[in-house]
Length: 95
Image 1 (tube, rainbow, N blue to C red):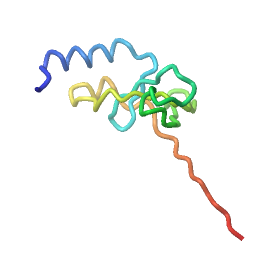
Image 2 (tube, one colour; image 1 turned 90 degrees about the horizontal axis):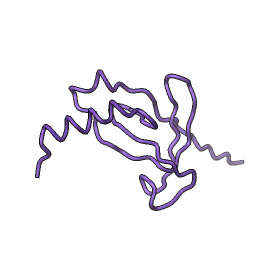
Image 3 (cartoon, one colour; image 1 turned 90 degrees about the vertical axis):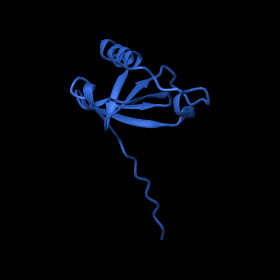
Image 4 (tube, rainbow, N blue to C red; image 1 turned 120 degrees about the vertical axis):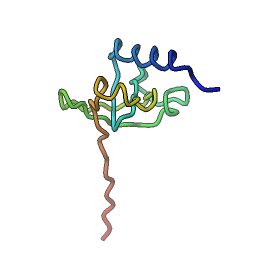
């Protein structure tokens, strides 16, 4: 069953009104949850994510990230990317 245009517009307008703990990365909208520790009941099953906020340069680590969906074309100017992933590179040195 497809979602109605009215539902989609209301959902994304609600995202515009409440920007608390919201990030957009590469056109995808996410919410940062409240949990500070990993748990299966957290967003993405408690996986660890590192995010850098564009406005402040602050780096955030979260174990509670919730995906809201791809920002629709008609909302892209209103909800531009405001963060990026911080990549962690693991290096193993061998003798």
